[in-house]
Length: 148
Image (tube, rainbow, N blue to C red; front, side, top):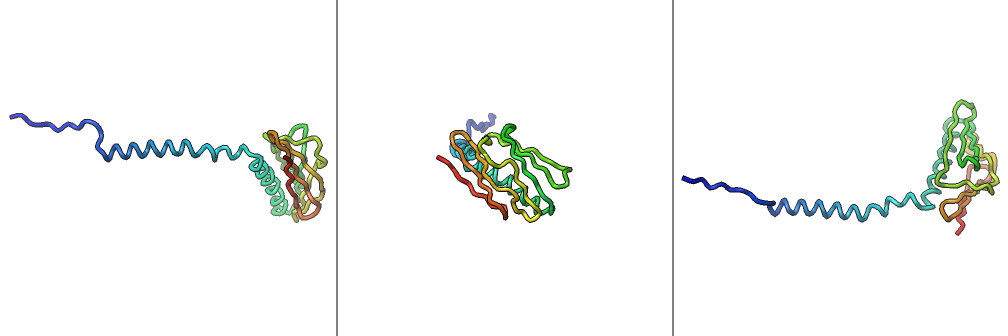
């Protein structure tokens, strides 16, 4: 007597649909996600990054109830942060932003209430666009001016 062996060749229809759906999903993600990954490459994103760093040190001054000094150094293209007690300082590189030498604000101090003790303008360049942060005295307010 001869036994018949059932031998499968290839995929079933369900397996084939699963494989095709995985391939379609990976192609969809490959084509759609890079648009969102280039978001960091915009001027608006760089402005948000810079202002969030400045806002962080303003809130740090309020939280610790001590003055935080931000020293803007255009030749090193960074910001040096010094707290009132002098024990801690940070360096924040500004790359890919470029701090322009035309800025008239060398330092900015946030007191224990978050108010600004100096006022002036910081000019930045990013790729082909320039923008300025203008700091107003008191209350730590600033505005952003974009140049076309």
